[in-house]
Picture 1: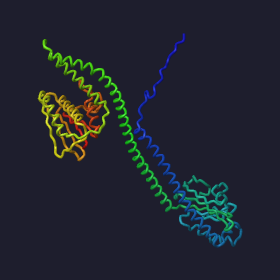
Picture 2 (picture 1 turned 90 degrees about the vertical axis):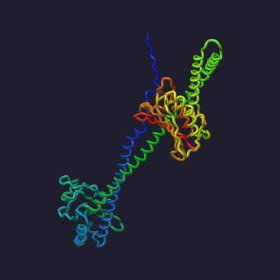
Picture 3 (picture 1 turned 90 degrees about the horizontal axis):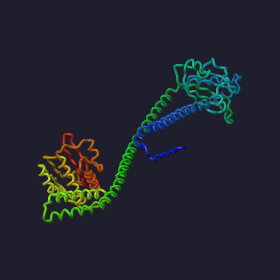
Length: 460
């Protein structure tokens, strides 16, 4: 018997960790930006070095070519056995040894033999394995930079150079016959260009500082943009989740309202008939039934209000009068609990944009929350002020025990509540209504006790 097993395929996105854009950018972008900055700095500094060395070698080439052509010494390179040309050439090449920063000067004939050198021990010698000399004999100006390390010379002809001057520039200058352009010899110059080297080092420092500064500026700019984009994405994601939740709540609310309100109406009607009927006294029970039915109906209305989209157009609302009205409606409740409530209105008030009925619902809900939080005794103040010319600010301040930081971070999350019989829609509904008309809401709580709910309303 063969037993078959069925594997349930993993759903797309299951066990998928959220992509943290800011974290990935914070560690990955410095690597990329630094790599680009290093590459650019190296390329620019290398180009700077090569360009300056080539430029300096070009000046030396023009000088050598001109002094050898001026008195006819150039022919000695082709006819080194001519005594007249040898004497003329000896007088001319003395200028090579007197050139600035020259460590050594060698003159090669057409057969690659050193015909003259500032180091007499090299005259008459040939160095076969010399790629730079081969290129110079082919008519190309060759520039090579290196270091002098005693006992570790790169080429045999480096022997005898002053090891105290570690850095040198070696130039192979082709000597050409005027007119035909034929190469008749080459001049090799070893220089220690201190001024040029200092200029190159200064240029390198500036190049690397510029590369580093550009990398930091680029990283800072991109980090700011990415951080803002990350926050925007998170806000949009939260709004999307909220919209999905509202869609579910809307469907659920419509179903609940349709299936519950009709039976509630019948129950309430029966309770009212019981109150009017003679006979056995069931007035207390009937009133309790009516109160509970009204409470359930109010919860349904709250659900419908929260799930509704709302237009956000609104009209003009007089907040000072509305606060007085809400306080008047709540005074009896506060008095039963031996609590005090007062209104403090500032000057310079103006109408705000909104709907009076919705704002009344918000303020009454917040006042009820303050009363329940304070318990027996306590003070609640509603302070109305003008923070600027565009908004009115309402602070609802209670003397209750306050809200813990853990709870404070979740008070605007739908269906989150610490009340045994609460729906968790009071503050989310208030936030939704206030923001619908361009305002905002904030809750602050002090560790020593007391909570302040701040409402900001937009001017009409």
